[in-house]
Length: 260
Image (tube, rainbow, N blue to C red; front, side):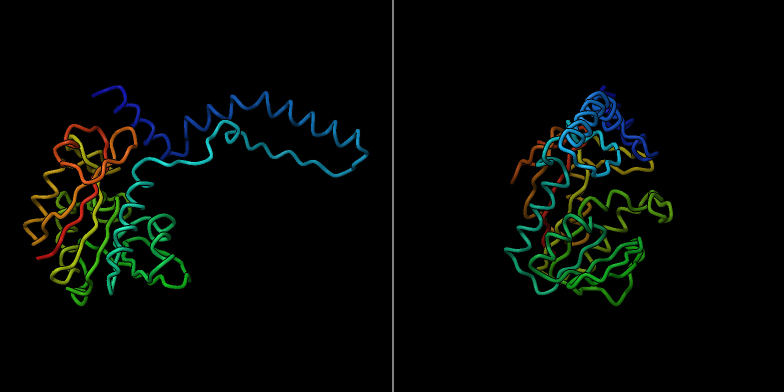
């Protein structure tokens, strides 16, 4: 196991327990500046005769933060899939388990979206239809219901119990079969999962060999149309060979499949 891989896994575990080492270190670094700036703001108010109350609410980690993040799995996969769905303009688009305040929000800017997820969602957003469903055991009435389906950074969690789903080592295979069953012939599936050296990081996620997803999808009539990926440094490689992503530690494979 490489040092970077161990650090990533340790960081994931600590964050899941409510401790973010990077934010904590940034906050500690910012304490001297916070004290100095607090003294200055009080001095400026006193010198100006302004009696405005000052309530100290330390917000420490932002002073060393960048203006945002324009790389990484979620940034690139959300743009990648949203752009392709916009170009294709399907009649009915169904999403399974993708991030609501990221990818789904992107789609809602230009179209209605139906979302299926094992987790509960309280929403009254126009254009968003939600249904709580376990996609390892999907409802029969949704067979061949859509000409476009997406599932971004979700399939790797199926069957690991992380979100209250039953533990099932074949959960991702059942989920992939369910995704295919939603599609009409000729429909498109936009799928992203962690790729690299295959393993289960219980109960966080699975990491798949890129070829493994392609082979499993073909069993369910899904033929690969496009492969792109995000590398270990968060950079996006569009329309690439899936073999290029096989040696990654924790990349993100972005697949477009067509239902035969």
